[in-house]
Length: 128
Image 1 (cartoon, helix red, strand yellow):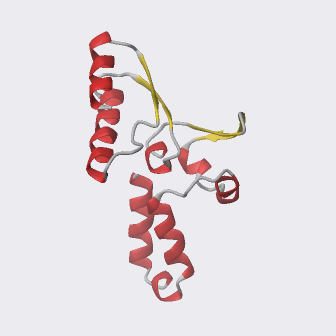
Image 2 (cartoon, rainbow, N blue to C red):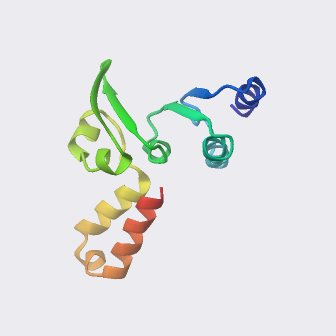
């Protein structure tokens, strides 16, 4: 993936389309590619279109389009899409890790009573 992205940079394209750029990578590889994608967007001002099932990666996007069986079923900002839990589950998409943590803690009365913990989890989720 890194070599392919280096080739894209060499071609100086304005738009970069990545298909499952973090699949089959170890956690460090996912982190490295994710940082590189963010750098392409912010430092080099590239438009990045990412095709992915990884909603943690998708959460870094300005906009998400959710497709099922070739049809658009939802679109919007990540925070809007992540509120549609039922739609995500029916599309076989896993919630982002931070949001799953927040949901689990919300259902646990001992954790839910800890307001600072809940705020920290929500802030973590918002940061992606």
